[in-house]
Structures are given as structure tokens and as C-alpha cells.
Length: 139
Image (cartoon, rainbow, N blue to C red):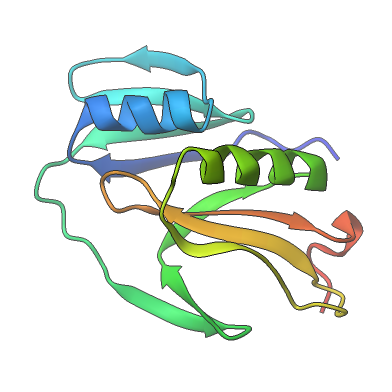
């Protein structure tokens, strides 16, 4: 499947902290930048951290398979090996997870490994890997 790159712009309150988190912690190569924003390559997708001090933060969540999932959030569906490597790298770095690496919907068509964390500005991210990648949209 050949997907077009996704673009997401999101608020941060410290570009240096965003550069450290997205660039060094998550390993996203940096693209263009200014004193107001930074482009990052998140596995071929363009995410842009925009300086927006004082931007309102939502503290909502929805129950999903017994966990309180933060809303809004964004992230990636990785292959299982890449997900495991990222989970180990984040654990080794002492990242505080909102939802620690776990498996949800076990034994169901949507079985997936998932983890949630916050960036330094409080934006929620989810990284997941499907037990069967062909069932990403299975009901």
C-alpha cells in the first residue's frame, strides 16, 4: 500500500524541548525550521511543532479496553519489531508513560501492542503495532 504523507501541525511551548524529544528521543530527522516552528520527519510523515505558548490543553480521555486514552492524540502504527525497539528505547530513557507498553484487544481482530506518552508540551502520542497488520480496520 502506497500512502501519501500525512501532515500534522501541533502546538509546543518550547522549541528546544520539542527538538530534543522528537529529534533525539523519537529519532525524527529535522527538516526546515524557523524561530517559530520545526518540521520533523515521522517515518515519512511531516509533523510540525509550532511555538504557541499559552495554547489551551485538553484533559479529556475515553475508555478503551480498560484504559483511559488521552484525547486528542496522534502517532503511528509501526510493525511489531519497530514498536518493540521503540518501547525499549523509551523505557531505557525513563519516559513516563500515560499508558505503558501493553497489548489490548487480546485475541480479537484488533489485537495490538500500544503505548501512550506525552511530549514536553503535553501533546499525547500513541505508538501501536497490530498483531495482524491486515486487520488495522477490522470490525
